[in-house]
Length: 352
Image 1 (spheres, rainbow, N blue to C red):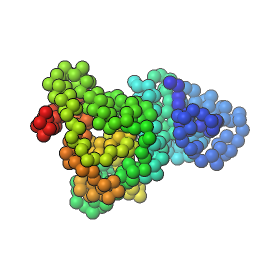
Image 2: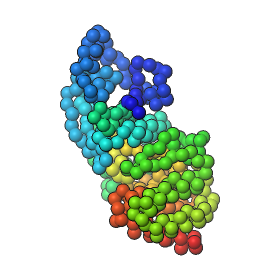
Image 3: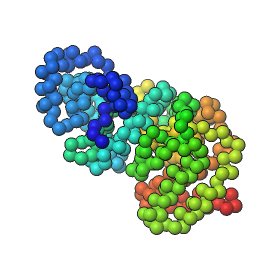
Image 4: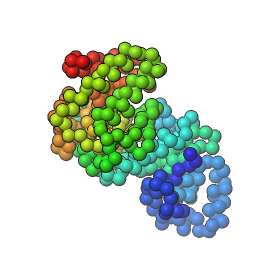
């Protein structure tokens, strides 16, 4: 797909992807481009750089004053573009087309629209002329390093942040429900693993097939691990009793909520980013808790808004399992024993 304009000043009646987002404030337009000829000359001078082109046109900047590399993780590169119209956060990937960033942008916008927890607003997704793709989004200045608000410190400052994160996350889950069932508008990725989001009416079927089952299939194909595959399939066939008494609704989930994807802004309010969104059982949001350190204050605040369902403790490891299997697929057999231990424990519990 060619460049996808998440923000379009030229046409208000674009496709659904193009009409996702509101325009940036237009008051700078006359000052930036007083004559049509000036605008044309700026665009021509930019050549084949779609990132700069967007910033200097739709982004309402007249000049880029600097760029700085910032942490982008192990999959993408990330930069801060500083301009006279403010800063922009840009991620690029030189190997993968725009579909991955399109999924991220749709997830960010869905979370943004709940008006609950702060997320960066995406502006533009597109292809790079030399191959690969990019996403431009709102730059949020973090108040502290990513993950500080879920530290295990007993400092009251951190306790307050954990409480706010739990409450706002629950508000997002409560605000955004799907009438299509479980899934998402597009396929996306969890890390670099494809995440299948085919709409499904039943949660247990969705989680069995598109989460646990898909990861087990990948492990079987990549590593030839028939033992974990066969035991995992036994768990899938017998896990229905774990959901007895639970009221399950398709809530909008971030999908990859670990400490590296959580921060806070300069006002101390929680910020979440780098999502793998889909509509699912709200408890699945805690599947990366082994890498987030949420703690008691987080859960207490969360359950004040979204009450705990019967059997929560019994299901907790089932949602960890998806992410342990994904880490096995991404990083190798170092995560196998954790995944197998969860499967074995459930098989004993369920007498399967």
